Each structure stands twice: as structure tokens, then as C-alpha cells.
Length: 475
Image (cartoon, rainbow, N blue to C red; front, side, top):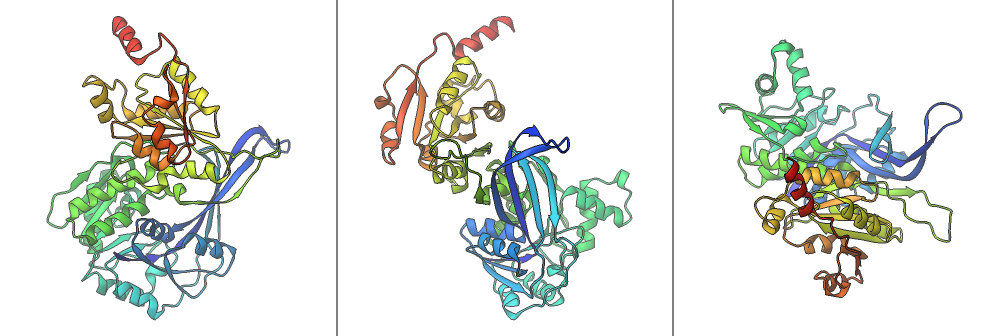
């Protein structure tokens, strides 16, 4: 599908590291930098997501000629960038994170800039698209008169999804869907004279529907999902799947991108919006925008003869076995690229006990990261019976990630983890038990890429069934 993204690009930078001491100059943590990751933000993130999905993507934007713009062009590989007159400096947002926790963010070059000139190539990209996403970040691209006229004409023929910004331009009339978040919708309603104490998502959405003249308004509400409002139809609440989120960055961009695709494929508005919410949740479960970043610099240890890879990422990837996405193996690829050893193990882990903890710790000691393949609730029920699992997959994953020895959790819905293993391609697959590694069913699969199976000692009198039985006696 030919998709054109119109809007403002930013450079997002994540500086990841650890902090184990305070500075002698001030009571602030000293961050030992493990790696620096750069990615395209704003409209650039929308274009990157769509390109990763395999679409033919054109990006109508403005780029400067500084170092930031050079990083953006590299991050936008695979996207046809149609940029107007240079804008400098490149807007850059830099986050410093300890593990998965943001410490501080620095914004540079985000002041208002001159509006670039429009080119015929930019207008042609809009006119020839099968679907359009406007990612307005308030820096002027969506305010250019020629571009607004082209978008108005395009909206008569193809779906146009407009992701607005408080500092941006009003959507052109006739777009298919506008996707404000709840805070933006309420702020706009208040500016329009509505009483904020009596205004909810539905009232704000109806106000924006009339104000903007769009086909629909989809008010996004974070973990609560979204509310779809269309002229003549009752408001439709769309719940978001339960997801463990370590970084919410990029959810709105993923939603707008998916919504445009589903509408372009001919899906009805309600179905397209539901799928877009699901896609945004899955995107966050896979690590969000950070999963698309490239490691451009890394800190190396000077101890020993060879530096070990530094892995600070922890995440949960909810895997659909029929649609495994390469971003789900980011951690494994990053470790392998640095010469490290990827270790994986799997199971239900319904009630964590000492046997689990010993097995996981032993597995982690064999390599540079440990990825746990975790059976979904449905998979556990098929394997263990209708009374299991005792603990939901979200809680099981959260407990596993709380263990220092676990670096990532991958949830799979099949009865066996073969699909996950084929994507992760671990160097070592670890199982607890009293059988030999050669008889493990995964042994032949791992041999395809040179991996091997290892077993660790079984710990008697420690099992989920025994623990559940003991709990039943005291309940």
C-alpha cells in the first residue's frame, strides 16, 4: 500500500545506563552509559513503523542540514523523504534512562521555526497515496496552504487520519478520523467554551466532531483504550488489551498509522479503530518506540580480554504465533551483535517458587541475557486443565521480570515454544529436569542454528502443584 505521512520530524535519543553512586559534586546520580539509541520521532516514527510493516512510504516534511538531520536520514532508511527548505536546528529530545526508568529529558531546537517551501514532489506524494497520515507536531508542515489544499482534495478520495497537536493546525475538513488523546480533547473543548468540570471524553469528542467537520473523532485514553465518535452514530468504547508497558512512547503514532492502513484496506470505521487500538497495545508490549531504535554507541567494559555486552533492557513481548514480528527479538539480536551468548528457557511459571528461582538463576549464569518463553493463559489451560493458570499471564510476566536474572519475557499462545525459539534463536536452551539434553524435543530445532540444550538439576518437593495444594489447605 502506498501511504504518505505528512508532518514534522523530531530526533529522539535515549541514553541508557546504570547508576550505582552519587556524584561528589552534587547529590545527583552518576550514570554509567551503556548505549545511546537514536530514532526518528514525530512523523518520522509514523513513517518508520509503516515502512517496517512493508508499506511503500513517502514522508512529506522538513529536514535541516545539521548532525541531527543526518541521524534522522539514517533512521529513515526505506522511507522516501520529500523535504522542503532546510529547517535548523533539528528538534531533538534526549532522555536519560537508568534501566527502564527515565531520569531526565532535554529538549533542543524545539522553538518555532520558519515554515518551509512546498515542492511539486510533496504535493504529488499526497495526491497519489492510497492512505494518508498527518502527524502534526506543531512545527508548520500541516499549516502550509498548498499542503492543506492537497489534503482537502485527497480526503475526498482516500482515508486521511489526522493526529493533532495542541500547537498545531486545525485538521482540514473532510478527513476520515482525527485522533486526539483525552487531554488534548478536553483542552480543546475547554477552549471552545465547555465547562471542564462537566465535560468527559464523549462531550469533548462530540464538540471536536462539529468543530473539525471530520468523519469521526477517536479519543485515545491510554490503558483504557479509546472512544470512537462518528456523526449519526452512538459513541463506541474500544477497550485496550491488558498489556505490561515499560515505555508508552509512540502509542499514538502506532495507532494513527494502523488506523490509516486498516481504513485503506477497506475495513469499516469501528473495526479499523478496534484493530488500531490492538496494534498500539501490541506495539507497546514489544517495547514501543524504543524497539525501533538503533544502537549507535555502546560502552564497553575494559576488564578481561573481551568486553561483555551490557544489557539493561527489560521488556515483555506478547507474541502472536501467526505473526511473529522481528522487533520481538531485538534483545537477542543486540546481544549476539556484541558477541554475547543468548540463553532462553520456558514454561508456565504459574506459582513462582524456589525451584523456579534456582533454575532461572542457573540459566542466566550461562550467558549474557536470559529470555523466558512464557505460556499464555490459553496455552496453560490446554496443558494443565481448566483450573489453571492460578495467576494471570500479566502477573506471571511481571513477577518474572522483577527477578534480576530475567532480562525479557516472551508470551506465546501455542502448546510448545518452537515459534518463539525460531525467532529468538538462542545459543542455549535451558530446562530443569532429570532427563538428558539430547532427548529434549527442542534439541533438533536448536541444532539448526548451532544452539544446544542444557538441563539443570531438578529440585524435589518444589512444584507449582505442591504449592497450590498447600495453599488450598490454609485457604
